[in-house]
Amino acid sequence: MKKNRIAIIITTILVVIACVLLWNNRYLTTLRGEAYDFTVRDTASVTKMFFADKSGNQVLLQRTADGWTVNEHYNAQPVMINNMLYTLDKMRIKMPVSLASHDNVITRMAGTNTKVEIYQIVPRVNLFNKVKLFPHEKLTKVFYIGDVTQDNNGTYVLKEGADKAYIVHLHGFRGFVSSRFSANPEDWRDHKIYSYDINDIASMKLEFNNKPEQSFIINEKNRYLYEMTSLADDSRIDFDTIRVLNLLTSFKDVRFEAFLTDIAKERRDSIINSPYQERLTLVTKDGKENVITTYTMKINADAFGFIEEDWDDDPDHKYAYIKNNDELVMIQDFAFGKLLKPADYYKKGHIEPQRKIFIEELEEIPSRSLSF
Image 1: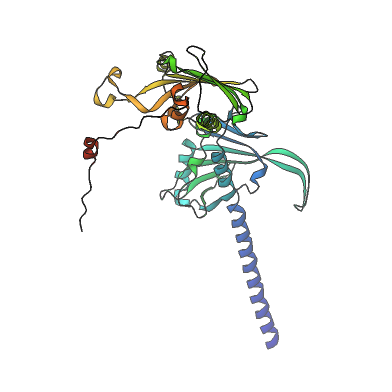
Image 2: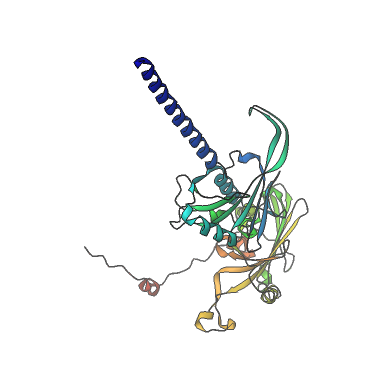
């Protein structure tokens, strides 16, 4: 009788232990499943990403044979796309939103959120993740990105159709991911104006509105053999070959600094119709023509009560009108200055004048007194 009682006790203990282990395993499995609920592990299969926010902004990022596009018309920034794919791969659930704050989080997300749709190529038939047949494009993830947590180290997310919100983060990264899911197309667009190898260029023409005698055109006559002509009198220019080759190789990666879509239409039209500074025309061997026209940019001094006519010219920036895209952008002299040099610069034997620094300028530089 005593042995039976001991057997019953041992059996009961074993059953309890088994139940606890099964429950823990089920709980851990659930947590693991939830942790990856917003994750896209196979980012190579992603074909489209669609973001839309409450302000009416929408952006469609689409993979093509030539790279990613923005709203089907513009090239996307590779860095931005790579960061987004990395985020989708590494994003994990940190914890569920607490019951005490859940209703407030959901209310805020109803007013401020970004809808995210992820499309992938997936098989219609998947046997044990070994045999995959009949691939097709499918909408695989739909969720909403909310604002950030109070400690700025998490982001609220809600799966479509779910009633429980979570906090997600990137493991090993202090910060939030909500800003990466921008629905503004300008945040995704590539800022490249020119992206041509020297072998792609048939001709390059540079016109100076205020110095027409410095305008010129360079035509390729043969491979790495060029002819430079003055536009003022059609005379041949005896040019420095190294400088011309440096110029033409500079079109490999030329970018503008910022979009200017927030400028009023009247102001935009006024800029474009004003006297230009330089007009750069690049013609490729496949017949494509790219025209950029630059205009003086003024330093905005509204805060000091000055009218626009009294504003100084900005020496570091210019307006630039991209004819192909009918867009006005801002460019930096740091990036464009080397492309907008006059004809004299390329003449053989030309020496660039060196800027002199006078002692008065050095005296104006403040010194830092050291205390020991």
